[in-house]
Amino acid sequence: MAQEEYVNDKLLFYPGRNLSAEEKRRMDTYEIKINELTVDHIIYSMSRQIENNFITFYTVAEEMIGEQRALQIANEIGLRYGGLGYANLLKAMGLGNEGSPRTMALYQDLVHTIRGPKHAAALFAEYDDKRCIVRRKACIYFSEKFPNNSKYTSAFEQGCFAGYMAADKNLKRVDVIKCLCRGADSCEQHWVYKD
Image (cartoon, rainbow, N blue to C red):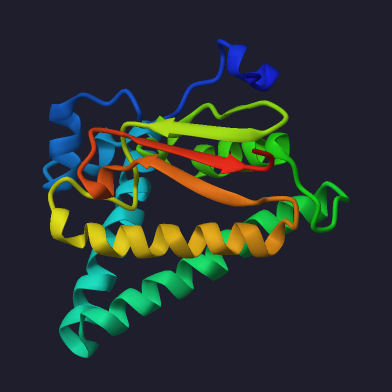
């Protein structure tokens, strides 16, 4: 399996990723003072906001319109979210709708980098001529504090996978080997281009 050259760049780091548990707690409970904020605190907080919005949205949707409709919304948002993002990357690379394991690895690394320290746990993807593999121990769409919302993470994820396949005619399927939202201790997904 190959990885991109940037995985060896020792200068790459992720702001917010190395905050102590105590600093994260202080941020989450608003005990920190504004003059104590650093880039690490702000990036951590923005990433947490993505996770909190995800959880809150589906909790409220379920209360207002029921579980099945909320699951449909999660799937549809995933379909649009994943498909549009990957389609944009393929277009930017001049590839139309013809991706490869490498383009999927580039996309996965990019989006996992730009969505905050918890999502950066998925860095870095591996690939060969048949598949792209992503492994992670944390996900901004799954909260250990709200495991009942994992059904929405799964529906969103399935929508993303369908979106990727719609954007890339070469992608055959996505195999979920294991996933936090299904009770595993980590996630592993394979984007399969050839068997």
